Length: 188
Image 1 (tube, rainbow, N blue to C red):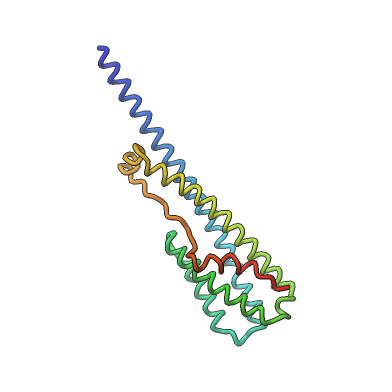
Image 2: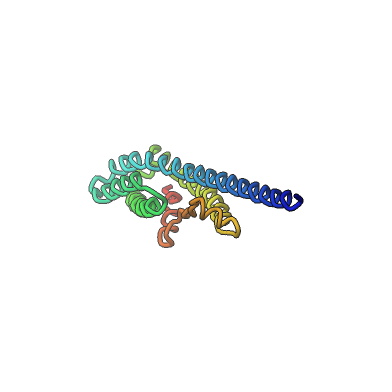
């Protein structure tokens, strides 16, 4: 009879551990998905600012048609991207296209002096800062979730229940400087 109680106690401890592990994984998964949603919101805000920026610069630099077409195409690709890896690639392309718009704007002092352009530049800078903050929040959650799913014995439970690691949302090394510098260009 004593062995039965010990066996039931061991089973109860294992069941409680499984429940706690499962609930912990679900909690971390939800926080990570929420963090991705924060990035998504800021990216959409950025996408909404881009047409206004293009129209403003286009009014001064009408002969730079190819640059504006590239920005429009890159924005459309970013809007249609699915998943972290595809979004990451699209964002790298968009950052490069925006860099070209800011380079063109440097050639037009009247454009740099307009209140509308300065406001758009400030909003884009603010949005880029929010994207970076959201990205850091996402990285922390991805790190916590991926660590929990990879350590023993949690990895067995995570594997049996189909939990998959999250990908990081990173900018390629060649794009980091462009993405950081583009919204911070001083046109004054």
